[in-house]
Image (cartoon, rainbow, N blue to C red; front, side, top):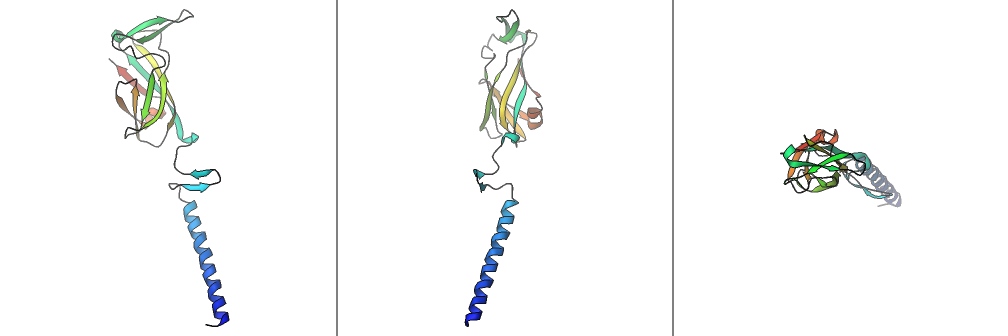
Length: 161
């Protein structure tokens, strides 16, 4: 092989290598479902702040399962009673993915001023999006399946009778 032929072959291999590298880079940049390495480290499909939401709703107790308490300011609020003593402001609320893995935790808010019925607000911040359904558990009372639509729209409505 002559010196000119060897040089031309080397140049052609270099051009092919550059073209192949550019093609691979274009393919990888266009794929959102695969992790990539950026200046901030590994990025990919993990939930970002834009992908999270606050799951909101209520839990309602029957009249027989609730009692009224007096606030320091003289107003009333309801809490669980008669077997529902674990249902009150600050009670843990856990959100799970469809397979049962914990996604986020929050708490019940202060109950309303009535036991007919007693309604307490639910708030769980930083729930990752991307699921069709979620499981919600108040205290250790069992998981209830809710749709993503209900969860994201603040329409989770649980009841304990």
